[in-house]
Image 1 (tube, rainbow, N blue to C red):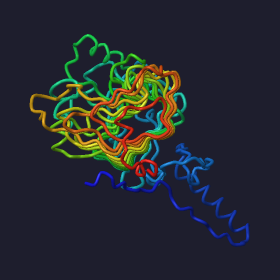
Image 2: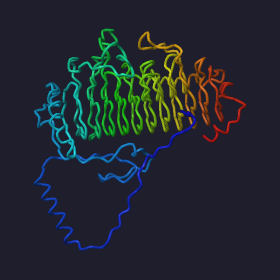
Image 3: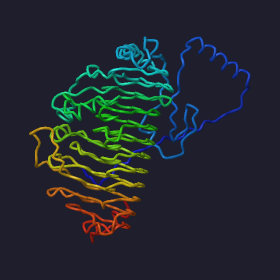
Image 4: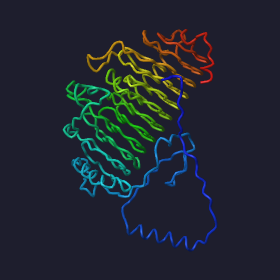
Length: 486
């Protein structure tokens, strides 16, 4: 693979221009009235439109968003032919009654409509306690205003499933792992959305198991979709995930948009959004508070990720804001053994955090990180604004290969301003595999004491219009045209 060769991919659709000709209104109005009467006789179910404002003209009547967007990652917004409420399956939204079997029964029933337009399950206002349930293809889970799905406090309602093949074991414990609250495997055309409803994992029980060292199996995520494509998650609040909040793994064409993701700032490993060995992923217009990375791009763990060789690629993270006192606004790695390339991070706003942007890897990881573009970043009171780190000594088992070193090449960071920073950047490559092709341009780190120097080891590149003065490794005499034009 030529790591310097950037792939291009489209984000939008060409507008369709319809030619309107004159006609008599009377037959037209008669036809519309007839269709409306027939539709009323066919169904009286409420079909909630998916009100997602993309950059192209919206078919739902919502004003188009003129900002740059990556609608092209997701196909047509579906109109589901079968629409039912969880109440029709016996659901009780009193915050006490278990609805685990109700959700599972409802989705099994609606699965039959998958080949005839798909189905939508509405969750009305109320507090709906449930254990894990699996979604189906050509399906919309719609949370109405005031609807709250609550994760069960019974660990048995979060069954144990096989570990991911690119991890070889549970991320926290050997063996299997708890399934996510909302789960799907091998699906296509799935939408999770609503009128700002909420999915609350009630993760405190799981955090305490972690803190008390009594956790037997790796915690479940809030939402995990595996081996799936054409996924939209939008317009909801996710909170209190037991582990990572949104985890698309081995997926393609995924949009996560207009989400609010919340967890206590000390809640362990409650990452916001973690695309993992996935391609064509768009994350935009999200607000995140968590006890770990707001967004972390991953692709497998040591020898298991190397063997599977399933990279994360063509990922856009745009207009994400939030805070994490322990980790970073956007992290690349540290599980990156399948490779990570063509990542665009722009218009990021991070405050009161340990790091702004961070690239994490280690000996034993293997794989590669290439063609990473980071631009238009604003940070406030971020301890280390820019960090490349190594040496976590975090491996799945004794089978990892210390000679498997990662290749890190082609990192562009530009138009960055950090206010009230307390430490200079830390850029630590690996002795046997230096990080190369680092380009920094128009980076201002305000508040860093001038006596604090950058800490750089085993890195090379070029810096222009960077304050305070960067380390010598970024003041190369080699031609900087590749950096100025990138």
